[in-house]
Image 1 (cartoon, rainbow, N blue to C red):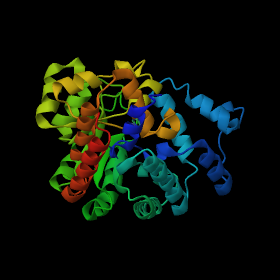
Image 2: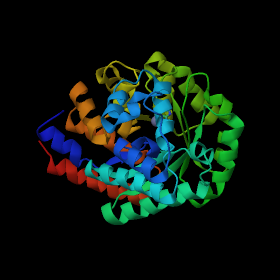
Image 3: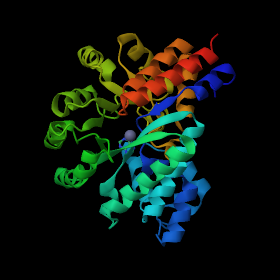
Length: 351
Ligand code: ADE
Ligand code: ZN
């Protein structure tokens, strides 16, 4: 990984993470631990030998063939989360890890439908996560927001019901925004237009996964039909210059996840991602970890992978991290603090 002064600089940058699924930060060690504590049976060795041990599971994680292949393991993994304390441990471990990587503000996704469908109460999930947010703020000074995701492999009406249940928390700010995730191909953004129109009317922040496995048409649809402020992944803009120009002109931020895109075979290597193209065309983006326990790296690993592939200079990183601050869903006051933190780091690491 990138060594020397650039590594230290990347570590020190005050990073905002915008694209991280809390359930995707479930490390195999915690997965097995919670399975045994909660009496959850994982697939037997004859059903799937990957679940024999932490090592065999980690080895399987290095051989995902597609988004759906990963999602199969992702949903089995999260089935061990039952009590508010489980959700709290999961999120608190992530915040600690993110803090060590230089994250100062994190906006994190979660998937209520995948838990309520197993009989877990909606409030158990939110109570656990908010307890972790409070502890992480006190212990690490990290600020955070929750983003609730509609799962697109389930019927749209299921997502609508979950969204209705989340409205009180979206109104009070306990949840800061709405997202759309899971199987992308065959579940285009326009199917969710009613949910997003309601969210827009109520003034909620909106983002959606698009242009991960599917093409730029899904990214255009997320803008035209859902009027999103951010697009998650969004690596397909080079397929259509006019959509790329629209993103640049409307300041629609793309939350990129380099290691995820390689692990899920969306690109064969990080160097194939349109990082340079986006910098040259004024498309704003942040660098994120997506599901760090599954993809072999947290946010700093993702920054290092981009550095190795593109050899960016410090001014370019200042731009990227500055855009991530501007595109965050936190207060202007907090953005000001993060901006000053960035200026301090730039002075400290001046060439
Ligand atoms: N849920 C968790 N990770 C995801 C990804 N990479 N794409 C879509 N949905 C997800
Ligand atoms: Zn994602």
